[in-house]
Each structure stands twice: as structure tokens, then as C-alpha cells.
Image (cartoon, rainbow, N blue to C red; front, top):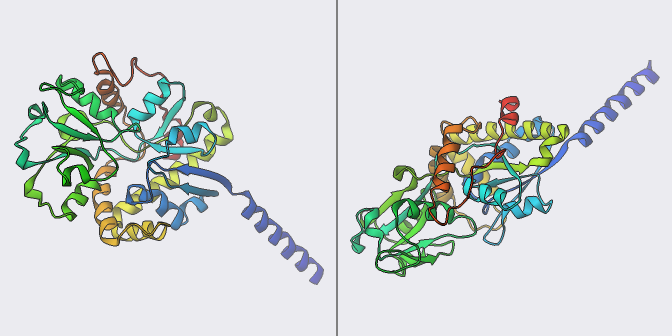
Length: 328
């Protein structure tokens, strides 16, 4: 009996060891630095949702010098967070990105202007200097200006585009009449700098009818042909969406989890809690599956670029429901 018990115990320990070793490694490359914009993934890891799916997930923060599509193409990640305009532009250039899930339902992008400039509507942009993020973030802006018929090469009838750093200095120093901001981040940096909300006017891309999808999950097309990889993505998306819904329901706790993962120490509790509250408004209404109407609206907007469209033809194979159908 003693020998049998010892054998059973050894077998159980071996099984546990095998289970511990069997977790599939997966690397996620974020679009930007560690912040509540990516809370769902940090929550999924912290709350054990990835572990429940037998996944060992490494989350790599992004930054101004990191282009997620390049990281993915170079083998530095299995899946990335990217905005759809940049993803579709990369696909047309030969990096075969495929959207496998879309946790963000709405866009948080907007232009924030000083009221003292006299700007009251988009028709007042002509002759102004507008701050614009580049590195793939410029595509929604260029598409919007094209639809308005406003040239982006300066002059009295066009706009002067200021390549904006990832800060709000051009507005504070009055180098630009308007700057690019996100509802959950830079807008509040302007407020915290001492400019009152009533002294600002904002133009949300969502309200202007030119919103494009942000923060989707993308993989390489060829990788999806591997059943084992596809299965790993099913489990990843399922756990990630569980993380996102937990974050929506527990925004303050989610913000604290993000702070725990900020190795730079640059984030503050006040800012992250406020950011998470705004992010929850953007993920609300999404179960993770890409809404085809939202996709078509994004493509239509990107194609409406006149002589300089973001993409030159309608993409084929740029998204799939294969993963979310199984995950959800």
C-alpha cells in the first residue's frame, strides 16, 4: 500500500509538472507604453485568465520608436495591438496583417483647439497649424482633411501640419492652433497643465463621421494557417476579453493593476483611474468580434483620400471571425 501511495504521489507530481510546462508561450506587443489603454491584457494576466487558458503571456510595452507591425513581421511578437488605418496600410505595403479581434468599439481620437484662435468648426481649419501624430497615426487625420477638401501642404486654403511629438507642448506653447489628443490621455494633460475645459473646443473623429477603428488585435496571415497557433489565439482572445469586461466593471482596480505593471514609474494613480474610465466608454458594446460595418466605414474613410489615399484598393483577407467565433 505504501509503495502504491508513493507511486500515485509521484505520478500526480509528474502530471502537475507536465501541466506547468505545457503552458503555451505567447508574446503581445502593445501599441504604446504601459497604461490603462491596455488594461484588459494586464487584468487578464493579473487575474489568472491567461493561466486558466494554459497560456504564458508576455506583454511588451510600446513607445515612440516601436512600430508593432515591424515587430510582428520580425518575429518579435505573436500578436500586436494596432490601429486599423496603420494595419491596412502595412498590409498594402506587404506585411499581411489580419484583424482577429476588435476590443475597441469606438475611437478616442480628436483634435483639441484653443477657443481663442476663433476656430468654431472644421471649416475654420484652413490657414491654421494643426498638430498631428505620425508613425502610422496620421492616416485618420489625412483622410479627414481629404474628405473636407483641405490640402495639408500649407497655404491660406490649406493647413500647416506640425509633426507633433507625443505630448501637448505645441498647444501649451501656442505653436499650433489645434493638436491631436485622445479622449483618455492627452486631452487631460492639457487640462492638468492649467487650461480650463471651457477655453477649449474639441472635434471628435467619432462625431465627425470619420472615425476609424483603433486598438485591434492583429497577427500574420500565414500564422493562422497553423491550427496550433489558431487555437492559441482563440484562448488568448477569450481570456483577453474576459480581462476587458472585468476592467470595465472594476475600473479603479484595473487602473491599479496597470500601475503595478508600469516598470517606468511614470504613471500616476489619478491619471490612470481617469484614463480607465474613458477607455471603458470605448470598449463598451464590444464582445471582441469585429463589427463588419465598422470595418467597412474605416475602409471607406481611408479610400476617400483623393489623389493621396491611405490605401489604394479595398483590402482582401484583412480580417477574420475565425478566432472570435470559437473564442466567444
